[in-house]
Image (cartoon, rainbow over all chains, first blue to last red; front, side, top):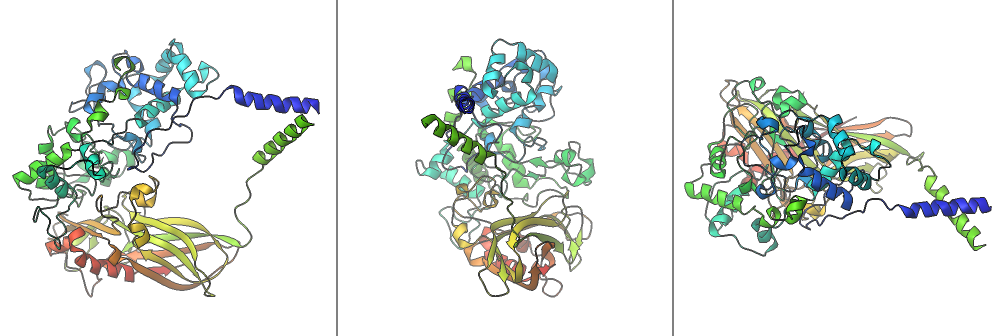
Length: 358
Length: 252
């Protein structure tokens, strides 16, 4: 019996000696549905700190010159200001770097073509992509294991017994934890929704066009009869994306099989998905230009002009992309509203920057 | 003795935590597969890949057909309380790589039933709630709401039409419907018996062509105002929505 008692006490004691990584509850705004966290990668103090360090460290690239932060700059709401991302050795990538505000809330798929199922797997793609960080995973893991700070940090963050257990999944998990912390919820738009601010007249007109408030003819509003912008069918609040894929009429194409960048079609294998790209979230959109999956539009005014014209023909162009007939004032108002999605507290948040720049 | 009690408690805890979960099914339950099938004029609805002839000479390629179902339930043959299968479901056909059948599986008591009943749309009690009150992956958080102040779009039909017969599908058709006033209860009567150990499967068929009035009362897509029906012209939407509510069929 004494042996049994000793075993039980030892079992209890062991359970108390190593609490493991410290769980962190992200400060999520009440206005958002709670973020969905994977069971095998909760946010922890150690994991978040490790992810933040890795995000801005070029150690993950082949020649230690390119980090995630190279194409995702905090001051640009984690976009890079370039049409196409530029990777290792100045190689130009295929797609525009999207902003990352509230990326943790996008639980369906990631990338313009949706080729990653979640943040953990998304983070693994650029590191081995020859147009981005150009690395090889065995080399990256070897570097991290030998590194005097990263080795212990991985052991702590994921309760590993030894560095041989460190693998790419842990890198993806740490980066995902940091990206989930990139929450933007204090733009002027948010403050207006909360009743803490008021739009200017032009911003209010833009909001009315964006959300199709003019589509209620039975009740004439202060702005009179206005066209609908048809924006919020896809750019649905609060994250301003419905996370689905559409052809928004960028290129005329009589044969859907002939799209040069097949987008979603390259992932699904269906020609009917060619030319479809994921609807990007619009938070901080005034900071994340150039726009579209290939950065072909330099300004928000150009984007509004595109949608006003109704886009170019392809049989799979979204049925919600149609000529809008906006006046110059209405287009300006729409751009003014989009500027209200800028959250300066987000882009200036010291917790979103490299550790040594805090 | 004190330590002995503590050890006993720990062992009991260990035993309880290691016990297998109980089988969730009892002898009196069956697993029911509910299928929701999308059709156009009796043909399988294939998103984007198929063209469907429309009365008057046009043709349509669909991009989206979806509708909310509230309080999906089985009505017992003996008049007892209905068996609620689900409070809310979003039935959506939007992918060129998927077929026209959406399936859900429910565990239900075996027995005799006389009907399937559901509300077409989001029931008023839910339609007036903030989507962000629900889980991010809840059907009510599928970004199908009008705007920040108005709630859910109950049903959507989106397509591109070729109205000139030139195989150019350049006339967008986008019909969005939903308001408390539009909410309709659908009852599909059919006597069914579910016995333990047998397959239980029911199929609810929705045919967009019938929602468009079929051949006898065809919705006129040559009228531009009929092709774009969003928040402001719900009186037009009501016609399509009511026909949608009336055309459901139940098969085994």
